[in-house]
Each structure stands twice: as C-alpha cells, then as structure tokens.
Image 1 (cartoon, one colour):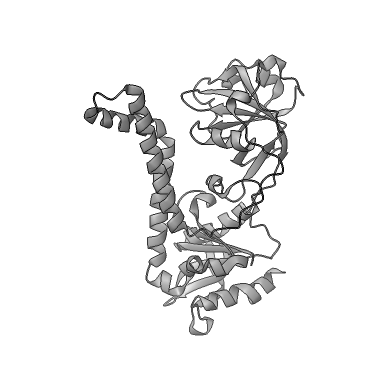
Image 2: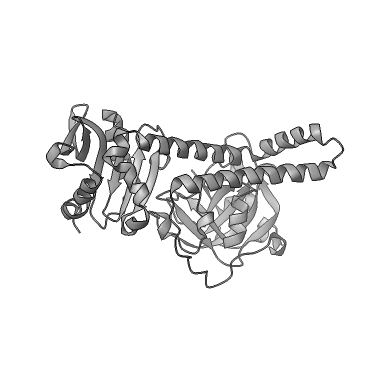
Length: 368
C-alpha cells in the first residue's frame, strides 16, 4: 500500500477515532516546519486551539520504519517544541517523546502493532485529543521513564547495591555468617529488580502474546559443560571478523548460555566469530564462539523468534540477534584481559581472529 493510501485508509480514520476532528481544525496536513532557510513539511500536525501539540509522519505499508525516519520526525518536534511525535507505516505505530534529548530508541514511548489494536486500545488512547489536552500522556510517560531509569540504575550498579544492602543488614545481623549475608543481600536486590519489572509490565501495557514455538533444538547449555581451550588452538580464518560484545555476569551471560546467542546489538558488518567480554569482577574476554547467522535489523519485538518475551528487555528497534553455531562456544584458558582506559568494550567492537589470538590485552584488538 502506497503512502497516500496509508494516510487515507488508516492514519486519518485512526486520528478521527482518537478525537482529532479535521473539520473542526484539529488537523493540519503538510504542516510547515522551518529549519534554517529550509521549509520542511510534516504529514500531520495535531492542533489544540491552533497550536501544534503533536506531529504524525506516515510511510508506505512496506516501509520498515528505520532509525533515520524516526530521527527526522523527532527533529521536527524539537524545532517546533512539539513533544509528541508519531511514525507509522499503517502496520506499526511508534510514539516518540521529542523532549528527551537522547537517540530515537531513548525517545521511544510506545510501539503499537496496529494489526493487534483490539488489545492495545488503552495504549493507542495515549494519542487521543483528551489524553493530550488533559496531560494524561505526560503522567504515563513520566512513570515509565522513572521505572526504566530505576531498572537501569539497579542493573548498572548491581554490585554496589548488593554491597550497600549487605552493609545495612550487617548492622542488624552482626552474628550472621558473612557468605550467607551476601547471599541474602543478592536475593533482596533481585527481588527489587523483579518488583520494578512487574511495575514496568503494568505501566508499559505490553499485551500477552501467544507463546512462541520452542526452538527445534535445545540450545540451553551449562558453563561447566563448555570445553576449555587456549586461544592458539582456536583454529579458523585468521582474517575472519570477530565481534566483541560486553556482558554483565548477572544478566547478559545468562542469555548467552540459555540461547547460544547474543542480543540485542547494532552491527554494521557480518562477523564470523564472537568474543564475549565479561564485566567486573572478571574484566576479560572469557568466551569465544562461531557465528551461525545474524538477523536483519528487527523493527519490533513481534519479529523476534526463538527468544522468550521475558528475555527481550534490551531490545529496541533496529537491533539484531547473533545466533551462534550450536556447540561452538569455548571458554578460554588464556582470556584477553582488559587493557588501558578506553580499550575496554562498552559496546560491540570489531577485531580479527589473528589479533584475537595474539592480543595481550583488549587494547591490541580493535579495528574501529
């Protein structure tokens, strides 16, 4: 379906159902936005008393809605100080908060499958005229941001939080065995993370999906069953691309073992191998595997196959999954240690197998 038909058959009826009455002056098509000396046109401006409060950009039905198009509509909002920006292809609708200064994935408020609209009625109502006029959308988005921030902070500072909880418990349980005290603190922090996750599920309005079919082969493995090798014995193509991905022991490593896969990443080239860098307290590349296949950039969670919904929290549009060859994971007897400041991978980075085998630290790996 062409863009013009998406507008006529899907976008305009949807906006009308949400209370935006074109005849009453609630909509302005091809709304002009000045950017320097240029004049840009937004498909629709949502108006309240003549003032733009939202922008909507429509694309053709087969358009995958890439990151650049999201950035475009968000930039329109930032130029005109219009907070709520929408991008849709008639199948998927994404709401962005242009007041957030981050990247498009940071600005994403909601992603709605319009083919499943019957189960997302409360979510689509965030775009209704009433919700915007009465600032209901602001309250919902504020709550989501607070919970996401809390979840990230607990994850990023997991070790510090566990230590702080253990110290507090120590003041009241002075005779408690130290190792059990630490286990108790870890359990408490995990309970907090779980509670925040439950609250997020409530306010994110993610519908329950039909269970995905289980993978045709059982992919889950145990760390104790992984063969241990020296890097010089890895074999393979010396010039083959190695993608090195950082992982937190508490979360990412579990995903790695559960699926013999890595996700979710942005990758601009096809790797042949993967090296997994474990963060503190390990601080080294401890695992190596062969890549079986890499998915194309995924537009929504509904496109992720073979991974449980509960394990897709780190996903955002445009990211991929790396599936590893089953049984190819190796634990390194001589892992690559962290090098000088700036050489420790914070995001995915690239090297070659030749460099990977010879490196004395992560500082000797990078091509980028």
